[in-house]
Length: 125
Image (cartoon, rainbow, N blue to C red; front, top):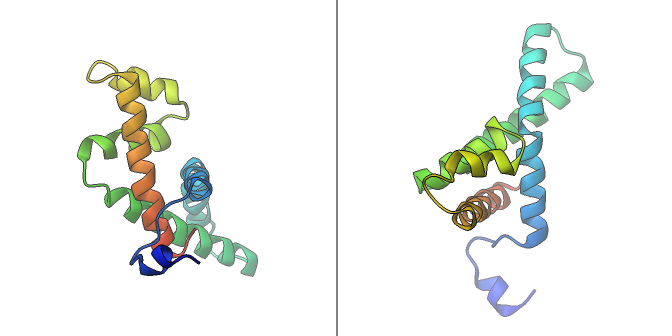
């Protein structure tokens, strides 16, 4: 570990960290659906209980990470991109009247960095 890395109070997101965060965001709707389904089951098996706890922790941490985005515009774009639609092009279409495609991409990148840093601090990444 370099001298600068040792001085950082909070670890910074790397490209591989951001890829992991994106994977969590992509899996978020599936985790939410699984949690809702398991809530309806009633008594869970031991393996289902472990999966439920894992998903619940991840979902709560992702929610915290998204809510930690200060810029409301960035937060809206991230929520639309990863929670409401599954394709980037639909997010671009939704926000293109307000900003350019490259600005939308920069906003997504900014949101992903914030989310990734929060997930790193929380120990998920």
